[in-house]
Length: 257
Image (cartoon, rainbow, N blue to C red; front, side):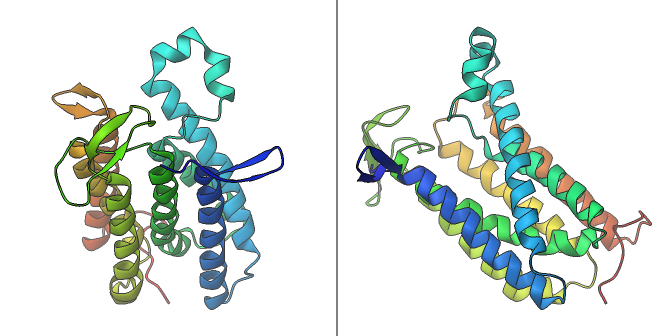
């Protein structure tokens, strides 16, 4: 663990916060490049990142308070204004809603932008997981693999070898971004298809990793994140089926020019 990156006088730069800032910056640069490549004003990227961050933080907090409703009822203000509790799925939902509203307001093709943004989210999440690794959060269950690590000061602590699930997720996300952008998206003819596949990847990846993470189970041996993951995967699958079968839903079946 290396939760504190450096100290500048009384100021402490935390590794998790630094990696989150890096994630936003890298996503912004990739998004700006993609938007410029399609001939739009690249400055739209800064607005998308801004509103995505605002919506993501709000969504992440809401999901966190729902997941830990007992703690929230005991100290609602403390949970709302604390620096903890940024649940990825909540951030994905909240950020998606905020970005959709902005793109609609900007009168841009929502499906085409969704196909650009979806893969970029994989990069942001992958970089964020590096921060999780150094902070010691989101680690896995005990194992005896050669690459197992310990997080003695984590929450929950693990002073025994565990799966570095943060690094698993980082590798998966970076790999899937490359495959989506390099091989999948160029071959798809309809808007929304890349985003639908992204949703399926995001849902399946988290659902499977949860089996070796330490999150508490809530029902049927599954964690709350796994139920959310199933919802995200099913949403992507339904969207993909709609597109493949040319079911006429306005705004979803438009072909790329």
